[in-house]
Image (cartoon, rainbow, N blue to C red; front, side, top):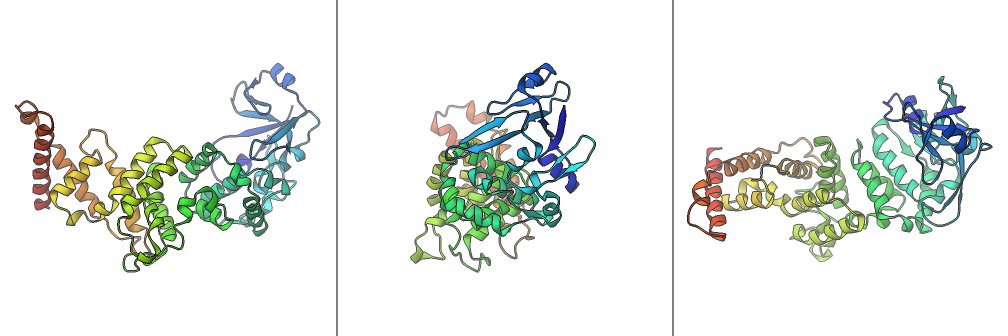
Length: 407
């Protein structure tokens, strides 16, 4: 059996990065011969098998031919006569089209090693344009490798832009868009994902709610970066530094969507942008099939981030009501994630990156004080229905007020 390690495993080995999983390509075999050798078939769209011992994936060498729009419009040909070079050229980027023998010998027919050394994302052939998901993948690679100095080849950017103009991205299904966004949110530099899409004009098509924020001004006194689009990218970068949670990063990304619909005659003011953005975010989450855990936190951050920033100015009653709305008094809650997203917003401003965020300690302390009040007398008393809730609220407000005075 002629086998080669391929794809991301080879790329990351050459970069000196840890390899999370290994994929192999098999030359000169058939599905029947693979099964006879103990491999278990698992591929739905093309012949892929699990190794009987390592459980790693082994795929038969194959070619692909475009037959319809979108990323599923391909006819796959897998046969013993398909060469390694034919299999590699159907891939997206040169750095992903290298192979390695089990003994460690590199096979690099398309210049991947040179592009890797020069830190360049470059497409292999014009066939790149046949699959719109590749635009999202390149953007995700930018998010993963930006810190290493990678950039997009100009000819690849032009090709990606031509794909957008031709309407290829219109065939992307929501589930795949979310899958790539989710992966990008987990990368080291998630803002690079959006900048890459913007550079090839795909951001407007795929994430119009984000795209429309660019060019919208904010008051320079509070936002030296002025541009709202740049601000949300800075917020996303700060969120990536503050938390590994993709939910926190998503919330930081979308918290200012309401500024995209502020009337131009009111610029740079964005009064009420918190409430204006809620329906936009709801629709975005519906369109992209965003999981509920992401949506709930994002809605909370959008609605209450200004309150969080002004925590020291709030009355005890307002602070208590906000904490209640955030579910902060429940044994299991997302208050810490909420605070991290708000902190990312505060630090996602030019010149404020290293500023302290004392509001965090205030909110955590107030939540603990309010949650620790003894409500047994109220629950076991004669009050009914809404009266119970209001009595508990008053107790919590008193506890928060006393905590604030003690600070």
